[in-house]
Image 1: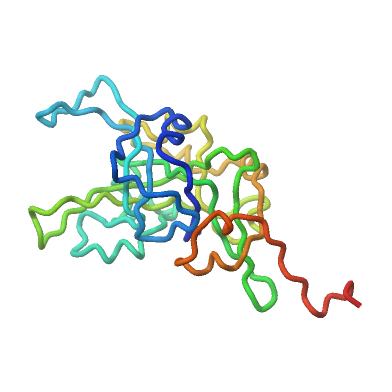
Image 2 (image 1 turned 135 degrees about the vertical axis):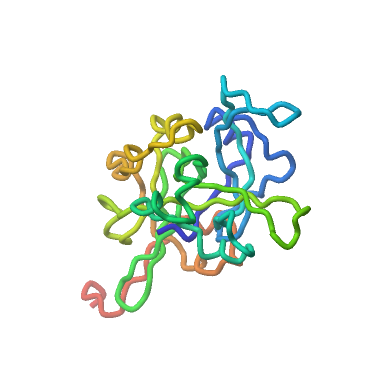
Length: 249
């Protein structure tokens, strides 16, 4: 699964990395080393541009950075609280889910991340790990998005929200947790973001090569508290040795 990640790069850096233009304006969230559900996040989308009358130009597309709320609120939802339970979408069932099937076909995005956190059960506690690229490049988490309007406030602003697609953990990640976010390699970005491609089954398989390149870094348990933030949360911190470790005697 994916319940927490880090996203500390500024929009200008992300725009260059993802070959997109920055449409976040002054709404981009600040550097965040402990992104939690319901927070605003930066997403990459590719859409047909529209003129002043709202008519789409079907002859071309534009890739841009947008701000979304993490936790997808389906268009049919009566209130936004459901989004807190919709932070992840299972890739195996998204195509048949009432909450995600339309977004999988028509509204896909990438969520840039420095890495994500997962907790491994070790003895009587859970050890947090930070999954990241050793070269510092962003990971592109496959995401879905949609637009929701509050039925009680018909004239209120729309809420654009997103969910992370997850899949069964592969390779070395299977030792940490049984689920993992679906990560898109740069070679898949264009096909995944293509707003005219509704069949994406071939893109839902994880890239084993990229998975094996990841660093699985043990980090401080401070990340467990969503109120904690800062680069120290992604710094390597080796687990404390158990008192019954025979090497200590």
